[in-house]
Image (cartoon, rainbow, N blue to C red; front, side, top):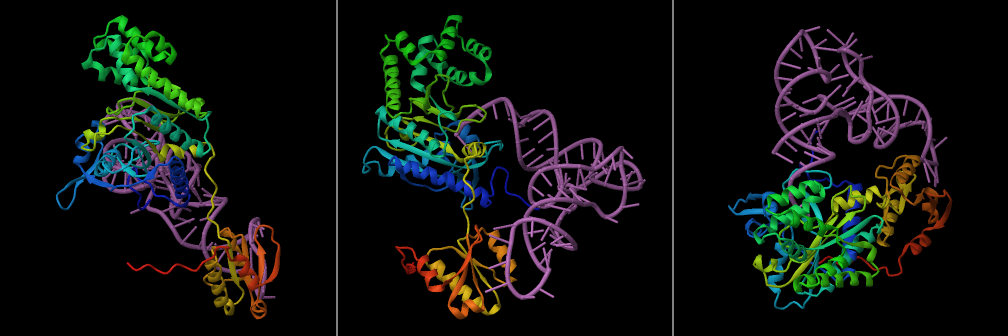
Length: 439
RNA sequence: GUGGGCGUAGCUCAGUCGGUUAGAGCGCCAGGUUGUGGCCCUGGAGGUCGCGGGUUCGAAUCCCGUCGCUCACCCCA
């Protein structure tokens, strides 16, 4: 091995690039279908954009360095701070809600693993300036539809839905002190991987009594309806529950009930979430979360942006790509040449090149052998590039103004006048090349 | 960051107790003469055996280090 890309970075050979394009174009299609508008920012940002308010974990894994001007900079690890700045710049004039999406390449310096590299593309969809729970329903539906767009259905994945505020209220109700809330939430988040015994130990260490621990363990198992019955008395809690119930009603109204599951064990690592949070998981659970997001009211202001409510999600291309490969949902190669022009002797080479050009002007892809090898070799070349037709020009054809047209699939072959070939090739809306634009 | 596994041609791999010019299949390139591909035949290119040290008369093979990949943990986009 002479050289290779940096660890955690990918070379996209045509085969990989095809998958990448398949994924990114699918993202854009679904985002636009939901009325989101695409934007982008710089891949390199001032370091302080992230050190100021981002989560500690993110800052630790920043891809940062000092540029030649002495500025501390970082490759963007997430899009939200950039979004906050950009929305902030025009918050006054933009109609609300602001529905923006982006497909940034993000970077994080951490140990590469399956489904997690140092670089990836991530679909970001955000709604800014809306507090109504319909925004949550729209956002989760969009995330679900992104996966459905690629051929995945409710047997393949599920959106687990929880609510930061509700979890906090329930923990407080169970007896967790306010200053221990964050640790308790974190413990709850990790209990899924660590097990119940571990959780009990953690909660005990946080000063919870046996009875309180019982209640916390119970919280995870409750359905929304059960919680509503048990905690009907508390205004704040019943308010949070009611909001979640509204959310699920709206998902049901969209026919997506089978794609969402209430699950209070889900918390999400990032500290800034303030309301509903969700993650898309493969049903088998063998891969990590495919997508995650939630409501983060207050974050934009904290980042120096406008004080607007917001919610959004991020969905990466790496795990999704692996999932599609596993499920056989990667489209076959489509880079094929329409026409391969074959010339029999060197005399016909100019005619062949002219024909290729005329076909290209009519929108067809055309190729030919540069060196003029034997006709057999030229056919082999046509086969290799997946040409659907081979067009042979020999002395006779050139003299008669015809070509020999062969269907590479069936092998059927016949002579047609050159003019007919070009007339048929012309697309109905054919138009000449646009004039080059002056810079 | 912590532990385990693995690094031989572009790809998938073989290489016997350390022994002479390191192999196969696929792929690639070139031929199989005179105007027809997918099959077949022949030939060729391509490897400092991840890299660096060590042991040995001799290392792809044994030892150490290092880098990379990978799995688990940590954590998370």
